[in-house]
Image (cartoon, rainbow over all chains, first blue to last red; front, side, top):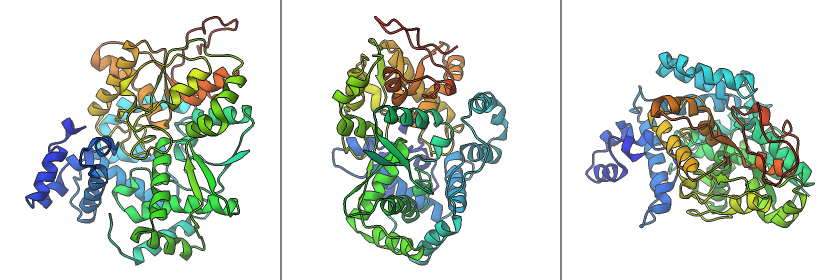
Length: 151
Length: 306
């Protein structure tokens, strides 16, 4: 995926060394990483590359400087909101709300695939939920009350 | 023999055929799967991009529930079929076992909701359980309708073997090849089998493809290479990989100019076919394309879905 990043992971590393934190956190590059761990497995120095990029994503979220027009951070936020509320994700609603937010005009392009999936029972529209979302929210709220290094 | 089973969100949606064929195969082999009561989302790869401790807490709740359902003192095997759920819960299993700062916070948070986790859960993938617990001999014996030399490209994708290799090699895994070979398939040699399909940009978005052009290019490369090497079908271990490789072949043909038309199924569907299970029980009717050549030397009809 590095070819789709405006800064490759090596360049990101050099930028961090040079103190250009803000440019790194605002970049699309960190949000282009799919988290496939190929670099982690191949790194001759055994650096935790993928986990480091996850940490940069979290820092970019916390600082509120993630690229607003880019799909992946918006998706991550939507996903977190839905899962925190209901305890489960819904593929159909996450996709739909994301398209509406980031590129509504592409909806038509993907509609035929969505319809074929629906006809085969693979894109249910109902919201799934855990039995007691309140219990899950208590767990998550308890973590808001404590802080710690987030790595 | 029975295992605790964690379905994950995709098993109720895009990956329904995975769950159906998994249940059918395990039942045919006489192994039980008990769905975890009131399971929640594993956090996938979206949650850890926002909050690592909460992502761990989500999986930790599932581990605690699995433990609660099976009183100790022994370990509790929890099967997660989706490679994304498998990776997320395995990571949490290890984070909690390591006992660092996040483990302490998560333990406290579970306690606030009246839950407790002792550390007995072992996250397992069904491929591991089939090959290493149930065993290839028993599976080969049950194969009443061997695959007759079906040339399968075994696709592992990212998260089944990376970053953790609990039961196979991170660079050159062989479990799926050995499993399908034991029921009569002829797995092809395919170096790209652990390369990312590009669809993994955050579970929860099957129709998304964060970067459509990148996703399309990565999956196209995988599909054409498998085809060039003579694959009749691709076997997958992840609902997102399966969907991503199956559903956009039409768009690829328009963009790159050559039709692909390659069957992309779950490894459990191919295994179940060899076990002589009904196509409907294996969720074949849910696939967007499904066409396997007639097994060499078989008397029955072709595995063809109109």
